[in-house]
Figure 1 (cartoon, helix red, strand yellow):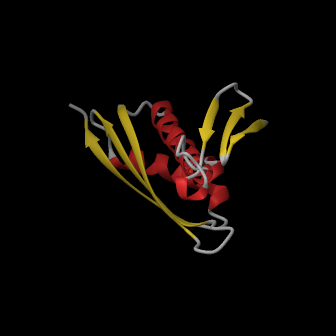
Figure 2 (cartoon, rainbow, N blue to C red):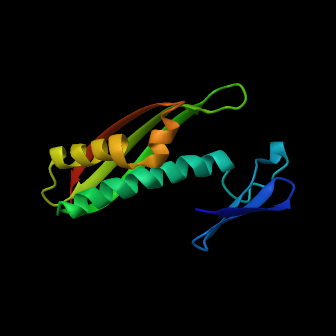
Length: 139
């Protein structure tokens, strides 16, 4: 996997992925940025959320679970001193489906956390990671 980061100005950068997609990252005004995009560490958190949510949806769909929606809410804390690594991350999945059963979602969340999500497994080296979920009935 490869990526390219190009400095724009001040503390603004464009990250280009090998897949051809790009994202603008910027700092807060008090740090010299113009608030043009998410902070780099926010992209780490969002990418990790995308990784585990992808797994959960993929596992549920592969097992033919009747999933219609998945939202992941993330709450994280960082160390106060540099390098300000993540120290705590909580993933709250809200999974919706017609007749979807809690054990199906629990299994998918567990498999992602313990086996498949390389991003969250990597961040678990510095952060205490917890998960919970709720199942909602689709209308």
